[in-house]
Length: 71
Image (cartoon, rainbow, N blue to C red):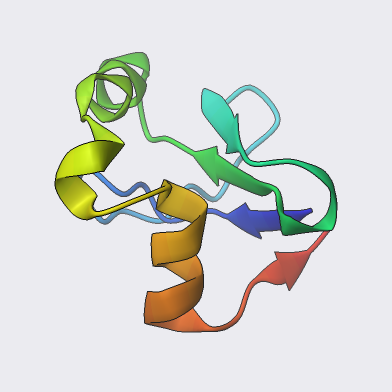
């Protein structure tokens, strides 16, 4: 599983992840755990329809960064 600690809504780094809200996109080794700065940002993220982005958000992450941090 890869981990993203930059909140995709506001671009802030989530430095304390212990109690931070998150979502897990995908499965297995390709899964992406995304942390959020707030519950509100997580809610906003979940409201975004990934079809508008042209596919699954994990695929988009892979295409734009090519890297992830292993857990």
